[in-house]
Image (cartoon, rainbow over all chains, first blue to last red; front, side, top):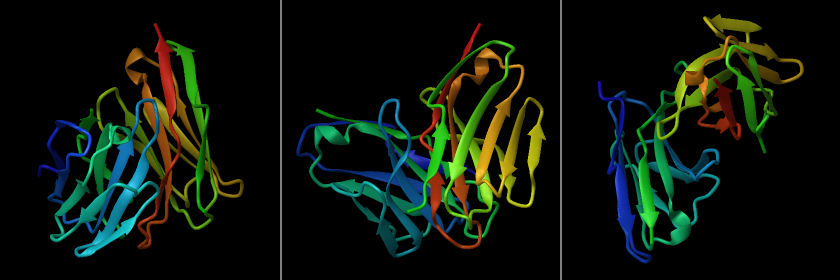
Length: 113
Length: 113
């Protein structure tokens, strides 16, 4: 099992460009999350999903959109990137009613110039 | 809303000494309390967890204690080693079907050789 994977690992964007980060999990987990982590900071929840076809806003959703068309994939989109979105993005998944452990992807390091 | 307070934000100890990190949670429904370790440039990974029906759990040099009445839980690392240097996050979660996974703000532990 690959667990949680993220694509790409690194990306550099110019201000105003758009991109999509892909998160995939092969554990059949119902819940998926997108976090951002700024240098020396904690994890801030951007958006989450409790199942296929459903998404909801987290703590810092502005400037991001998400989609969960398939249970195993959770996409995070930046429509018009800004330097303030320079961060490391982590995806995570969690099995509803499971042990409670949240499984993280390896992260995507995004720089917006 | 629900939150988890974590202290201290940074902690420096001499190699071989003990380290203690403390968290306080607000949601009395929480019944699962994990601790994640994040090494530099890596993803957070679960190192130990405790459920609300247990007061203490130990795994080699690490232990977690829980005081449900006071809504406190703590991570104890004994005989610290340089490889224990990392950021540690506590979290609180209610395993019966909710998505809400509340992380603490993190503690940067430095073990000085």
